[in-house]
Length: 311
Image 1 (cartoon, rainbow, N blue to C red):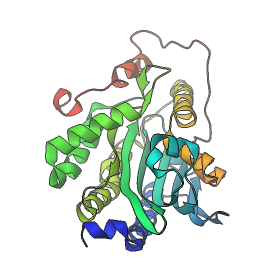
Image 2 (cartoon, helix red, strand yellow):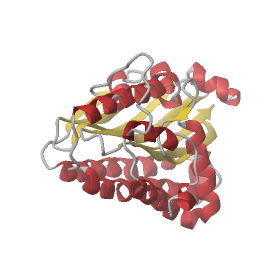
Image 3 (cartoon, one colour):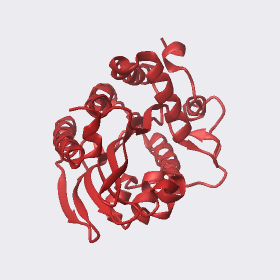
Image 4 (cartoon, one colour):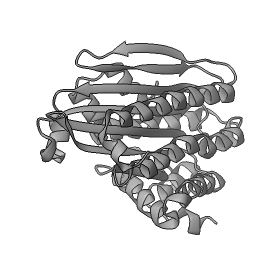
């Protein structure tokens, strides 16, 4: 399996097989960690081409809502948001397979998290004109704990080790900081992680990195679940969590390219918007009390060298 595979239908088939298995493994691990609720699956078909299976867990012991979706969708032409960014693909047919997840815990001391891994291919007149991999994962704490942030980034760094080591980590960590940035708020969505797109140098190596990121997500997140799931909290922490969830909504609806691509390409709206939390709130002119635990969050919503600063 070499570079040429990225130009054939086999690249989709191989990636699709991995992704459906990944969805199964993550759902099983999340159900085990929650200990009470189970995922409900919606299998769906897209009129223009393809379909998927969206799995939602609600009102669990740990997770207020968790969504893990697999999609395999195709179309005869790219939506405006994509063709504007890649004009050389205008008029090309396309197919995209991916797994995307967002976990919204109930406990404010347990961070929200997101992960996504995907493969895209475009064709014109039966010939592949472009293919690439993309993905990553990021962490959004409300009451950050240095131990958790350090573990998250150490795991991300270890994932990158066989694929360029520190250099790969630095590039994809910085890309994550820049992508998950709320420009209208002047803050990052959380403490970052890894983000990559348009990875198309060598199919075997790039597919290996995609798998490392997909498989490594549980190693990064589940230890944090075990440490924070039973932390006591009250109404104050819950209200702050809901307020900060509002920022999560703002990013997904205003800045996230995946959301825009999905909606413009005629994707299944419920599956695209499963990333939104079940509850959130907004408050005009909110400013946390100086010196409070809520005010402390602001220092984490900027790009930082976590491995050096927290070690």
